[in-house]
Image 1 (cartoon, rainbow, N blue to C red):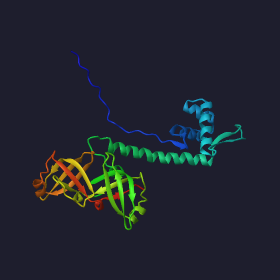
Image 2 (spheres, rainbow, N blue to C red):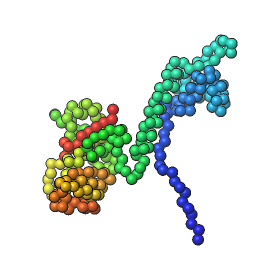
Image 3 (cartoon, one colour):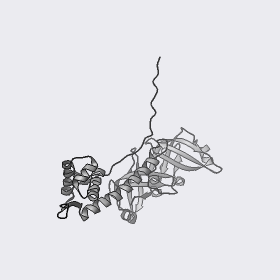
Length: 274
């Protein structure tokens, strides 16, 4: 009997390209911008095309398309001189090439950061880590604003999380305006682990906590006074709570045990990326 040897697989990696568009039309990406740079260096579309291994017609078509879609001349013909003239980039063309290269450098750095911080599937995704932000809040959840209900002093903001869970958040009217909150906006919900309450048998109890998430205990890390309890909700949300060690025993917090996560709407802090 023969067995097939599995091929060695490379790790998952992120790649991405930066494109310029005008409306729904593509102005160009790295290749066309490099073609413009070659025109600037050689002073000739013919020589730039040769450097790229493409025909003059293809190079001219690409440049003409960029000229038309950008709404401004990027390349111009300069007549006269011993050689009969040359082709060069306009001031707008030079600025476009420089600006694209500046933005592309930032784009590539961000892709490397994303690749390094997010493609390890054994680790939980942290949007704040990708943004290189540090916070004392252990719980960091990315969601979108699904509703904003205005009040005289405070507003209620409803968030939809990727797994389908919804959170109610109470913020001041000034915070709503300062964060420029609007529907479908991506936001980060921050909750300190000490603000998370856990319950194993609520019955018909009425509580002031607006947010209730069902899940199970994933892990318990005991301490001298407090324990760190990790919970995975039915929506796939990871929640970290700090609970008194005596309460862990009293309410039966053990790996696999069903549990309800309770978070008051006023204990959630919202953050947005600038």
